[in-house]
Image 1 (cartoon, rainbow, N blue to C red):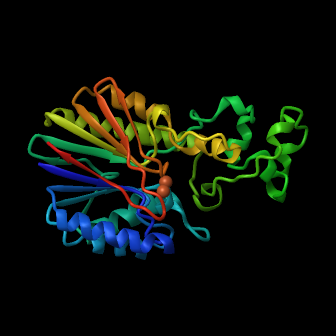
Image 2: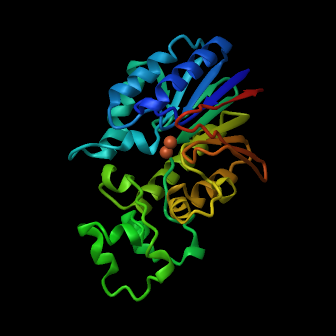
Length: 289
Ligand SMILES: [Fe+2]
Ligand SMILES: [Fe+2]
């Protein structure tokens, strides 16, 4: 059995168009039994998600997908949770794509489980000494200083050291993802769903493969000495997903995306891979079982 896994195609972004079309042609020509798209296939315009699915229609095996944070982006007042649980599910079923965020995929004695994953700031770089409230608002101190609605974060800010006042980045989920609860609550909800799906399939499968868009282990975090990038690691994922995955000995492989940096690590029985597609260069993994 051959499984092909790719991620972060970002087909809504112009510099990702041609690379996505090229990699889709290559994957379809190569062929396999199962294809997994591990999130950020497109963005706020869900027509682009449909266009990506169309690119992979010649793939003869089963086509599976999880959402990425970019598919939860909305413009205007739309609710990201409704989009995540309903609109993306509808588009997947219209295109014959199995949406893992709704339910696991089972073929013979193999199960594939996954979802978007999320972040609870457990990967925030404590060495930077930026107070938690900046991560919760998804703006670094230097950015908060320039944005009226975030300036209150710096009031009475004797806990903000001078060195981080120049860190000027924002995590744009803060503008475009609209959830009816906190990121921590969303993370807990998704971890519980992942655990539930794993409990369901472990009764019937001999082997499980997991696909989670955000990173489940700190070992997969991108490394950088640039403060703006370091701030961004807070939004890369959550160790709670890793803890859940380690509870299930039938999982052999874990695939994720989101970081746009290829990394591998071994965690007990898990072989973990972040795919590493960038906006201009798309990557994929081939797993022969
Ligand atoms: Fe991405
Ligand atoms: Fe992402």
